[in-house]
Length: 370
Image (cartoon, rainbow, N blue to C red; front, top):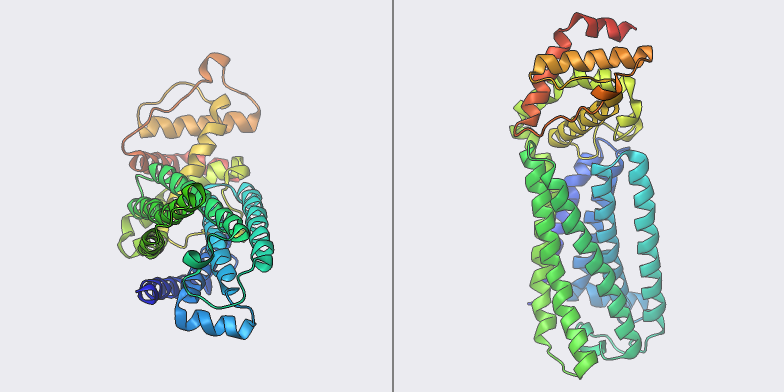
């Protein structure tokens, strides 16, 4: 049963890895795509190494029994750190995302370094066993090793679930991206079930010297189910273009408004042109990114705006007027600066109407030449 459960996870992992690798070949310079492909590779590697017929020969080749467990657990930690990096690339401007990615990388390397030091000195290399937790969890050095592993993985999975769920709340106009992020959060929660079961096993063993071996076995289905849901959620946004003709049309319709705001405020770009058109490869993300950049551009225009337009035509005129004011260095009167657009249930449709109205304004084309 052990090999079957982990074998299913390994198969799902390599399928997901191959799927994203096909996208990466078309857009190698895309940092988010590189990150998610690497994450799938580490996950697939972890599940593959857990299969007994692979685990034991590798240990034999290394000449150090049970050392393969270090590669398995390190791959799981690195996978979680890469997913956190990827969510950062999806949501934040490239410079901020890269700073966060470096932090996650350093944290991951610290965890892997500590685990490596502990497992290399632990007295567990005298004989091979596939029942690693049941056999060695009671040993003091290994107790520290497993505690560091489970704690770091648990914290990362909770962070992934929280951030993916919050991110999904911002993408209600983009169903494929929203569904994918929610499934990603669910996958993180299911994967956390693995940590909860094995963490419970360690706590009972340490605090009361009670061994409940079934907790170790129950954790395995959580790991495989969680990863399969992870793979589904993280690839789902790229399924959208097959049914996303309306979204593609909306993406193109936002071009006039986005271009004008981007020229005025280049810093609103979530990613530089060198980073690829999107870090996701699907229209869902590109459309979401364009909406966010328009919102940021509108926020940057607040000192130059006046009034609170009630129609898309009036909003387009207000934006154009604000762009002229900014170009000429004439902020709006102080009393009129606090322009806060009211939340709308159909924000995408509103922005499309505003952009089309903006494109119809003759002065907008004059502004392009200014």
